Image 1: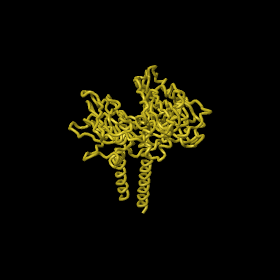
Image 2: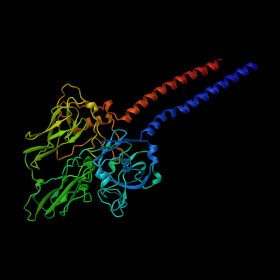
Image 3: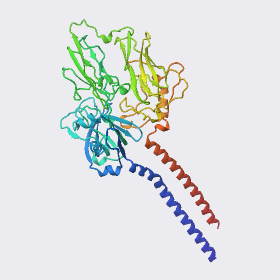
Length: 542
């Protein structure tokens, strides 16, 4: 009896030890899964490189936190437009760039997030132009960014990489690390729309020395030097109508970033708001009017200033040219007429049809070789392979054709060494997946139609404050296929391209390798658990 009780107590003790061991494993195992992520985040927080700096620099989060911290409130507007606040604390960008030895000839600064999304700004607009916090931003209207707030009491602020921040709040106690490192800029004018530039999870800063492109000059819906009746509405536009804004004057002065904005709302929102025309208010001609306008936006040089003159007819004899059908198209041109770019680069083509009031301005887009370049229904060209292709636009009425020659990289150039370019052509929309190089067999021509006078309904956009991440291909593909405005004509088949493994950003590749390690640990854990259960059963049977 004594021996039996002793054996029972021994078995009970062994079972409790086993249970304790398993409990310890269950406690430690999640930590094992989390630690690699911590280690990686701590090891590489942000890298600064490029030909525009003397020394490449890599800083851990701990090193960033050890630097002097700058804290301030920031005012912002998005492209809807909506006003909001940011409370943020972090490291001054100019101090980071000085550590890397930014060169005098530096022209562009590219910020890349851990998922590959990127924002490019000029050195001038980021570091040389003064930026402000406007405490009177929400005066006149608390949210609507089409109604300017007060510029009174403006406070100078520094662009920073925020390590903690709170979106839509003035409360510094509400700040957290969720979006860190977060690019925070401030505004050059109380009307400047910068919210879409607040890039989350910045992992790399590239400083470039290439000559920045210039924004396209804006245009008016009526040719200059036209006699128009009193009350005629002048509508301004440019090639993109998104993050690039049209600033204008009607008093003969030269427009600047402090002048009124015409296209308050980005074009991708027009089909979602019934008041788009009320927000982007036409300019009414009440007397002889001179409109001077300029395009100003992020990442490029300001456009040339253009001038349009209109004579107001007081006799009542003049006819509003926008309400008079101009007949069939007589001429079509594309701007630009030639494109040179690496694989992955995107370029917006503009269709110019004469007369400006042509009855039918729909065009058919074609690519002579979709292995080299593709074109969508808006005239957005994407270089997908080496060689030369011809993009054409043909009017539905009259079959008038204009072409643009697209030159990709040389045939013998290793396209795998080319860093994919993610272009922000529509403000803060998530970029489309970059295509792999297609197979060598001949593909059918791409045929897409669009009316220059009416925006094509895009796939459902992502709100700006949540759009700084790549969309999943399974989310993009159905929306493109089911959109009736984007349906391919005839029997053509949509092609959905996936991003190749070679083009996945480094952090994503690291994450993939980490997941493989996690899977291996999980297998070991369950194997050990099975052995433990067998041992426990063995103890009971003894």
